[in-house]
Length: 251
Ligand SMILES: [Fe+2]
Image (cartoon, rainbow, N blue to C red; front, side, top):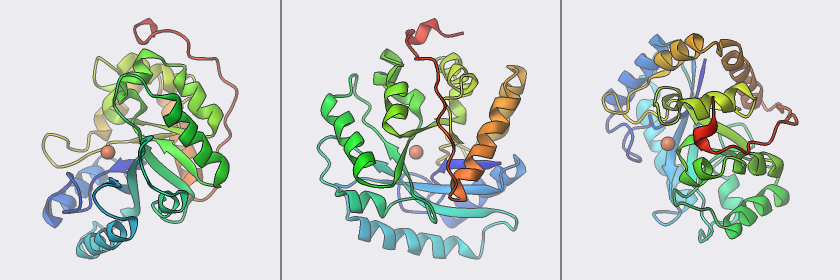
């Protein structure tokens, strides 16, 4: 399995605080059946330049390098904070793509209503580059829960969608995330794990829940899709029903 969203690199963001903790997280993920881990440390444009981030990331990756459990493949990426005010150039955003791909994991603002300016900026990035934004943990944005059809807008724009494993376990988001998965709106799944305690890897629990819900086949399709994406292939965006209902209307 592939974990598309993690904060395992030590000492670079609010994720793993030491090499030991990072190794524990990787061992847990491996025990849960994960072989490929995409490391997506937070990138906030206000804190440092992409160059400074990338050199910090390389240092952290080097500290971890000899200690990665055998059989685990770690790919370097970032979770790029994207707002309407951000001064980041397209080139800077592209430099933060996941290793060997043109995919950028993007975190959008958590305020109640995304502005037209924000969505226009995202659309501009898509049309002016050949990189694909993957919207991190779609179930966590109040804007999306208020207006689920934003998921359609993002897909129409050329973005892809990631959900956290936690989405299937939390009763506030479970039905929404399951509906997205069932209807083919989900392209990537990740634990968004930050440590080995309060935000520890929980892949196994999510898989068991999805089996219970009869969504194992949909889950396996997402795994295949992630594999294709990470190997540079394209996953087709099919025509889907428009998500019109309110969050509480699902399942
Ligand atoms: Fe994250």
